[in-house]
Every structure is written in structure tokens, then in C-alpha cells.
Image (cartoon, rainbow, N blue to C red; front, side, top):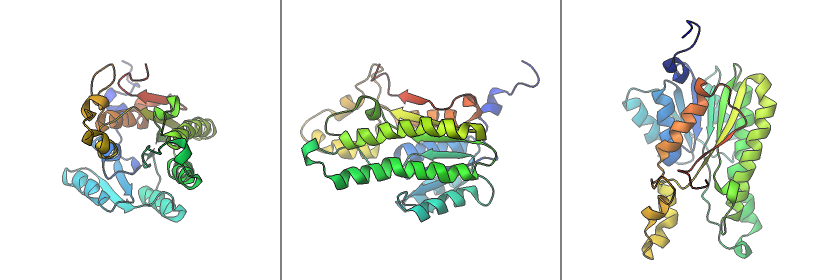
Amino acid sequence: MSATQPTLTDLIDLRGKRALVTGATKGIGAATARRLAEAGAHVTVADLDPNGRSTSDALVADGLSASYVTCDITDAEQLRDAVAAAADGERLDVLVNNAGIFPTTGPIDDVTDAFVSRMLDVNLRAQYSASRDAARLMTHGGAIVNIASIAGIRGGANITAYSASKAGVMGLTRAFANELGPRGIRVNAIAPGVIDTPGVQDQMAPLKAGGMDIEKVIAGNPLRVAGQPDHIARVALFLASDLAAFVTGHVLVVDGGYTA
């Protein structure tokens, strides 16, 4: 290897970087915050749930660098404040747009315009705003990682509004990648399959009560493995790091082969 070539350790090293992860109280967000912090970044945990402070406290207790900010991503002022807090008067290097609301919308005839507007506001418009605000502070380049879903690729009955919002995230990712690339900012998305998170378990509770083997459903992919939050967090770390230095505008499906 040439002396000028970075080592693998160098490529994954986020020391000196500042990152913001939205919706990081639990599940994918919390796992992603931990992986970024383990790689050396100072991670700002942003969440509407004040229990998100426990996520940052746990990271600090483990000797990692983290802080917490309360943020409703649909509130423009709170979102700008969260981005500014993550930059801490310097710059922002990584944004992970993880915060969102869950998919069940019911039969299309029962879905109201107000519900569709809420779904798009949280899952799509807020990611747009966060990416725009973050990009302004990525003065030395950076990485934006959006959390989409396989529902944005294949759709699904009873999750129409959710599917539309996540398809929008994919389009947003590609558009931002083209616009922000000349500024050294990479923009990618992850499209998870079914991941065993508290939110998914809560959604499937009625089915479980009806006798369905939910764990079998969650592991219903070619690998026969239940997707875990850390499976997505590892990919987020890859996209945020210099391992993905030539990757932008890409939607990376992480679903155990479910859509293969």
C-alpha cells in the first residue's frame, strides 16, 4: 500500500467530526448514534421525546462524546436550533435524518387528507428542511444519510401515505446529491426492510394478540434473520464515513434480501 493511502482505520475514523441524529431515543436512531460515537464523532441526539437524554447519557457514561437536544422536527425553529447546537459554533459533518412516524394508515378509503399531510410533513418535508439547514453548516463538506424504507420501493396495502413519503425521501436524496455534490456534501439513503424496533413491535401488537408469530414475520427474509437496529446503524456509519467517499445519490436497501 502506498504511504499516501489511508488505512482502513483512517477511513472509518470520525474523530473531530460533529454529527446530528434525529429521532435517536430508541431503535435505529439510538443504534446509529452509538455507532457514530464509537467511531469518534461528537453526536448530538435530537428527539421530541425527552427520554432521548438517556441515549446521550448512556454514550457519555461509556466514555463517548454526545449531547442531547429536544427537537420537534416539524417545528422550523426547533429544527434550526438543533442543527446549530450540533454544529456548536463550528461546523456540522454528518446528519442522519432518522426521525419519522410509522406506517399503518389503514384502508385508503379511511385515510384523511389531514393524515396524509401529517405523514408527508414529518417523513418528507422535515427531512428536506433538516438537510437544507445542515448543508449550510457543512462548510468543509459532509455526509447526509436519510432513512427511507423498502415501502418506498414496492409500496404496500394499508400503508399508502407512508409509502408515498418514503418514495419522496428517495427522490429528495437523489436531488440533493446532485445539488450539494459540488460543495463536497454526499447525500445517500438507507431503505430498511422490517426491523425489530419498539415501534414495529407496538404496531404488530394486535396481530400478536391474534396469535400471529410476529418474530417469524419479522424474520421473513431469505437470510431468516430478524433485522435489528444495529444492522441499519452499521450501514449509516459506512455512508457517513470515508469508506463511502465516492458514494452519493444512492439508496442502499438493507432488508435481508426481502426485496430480492
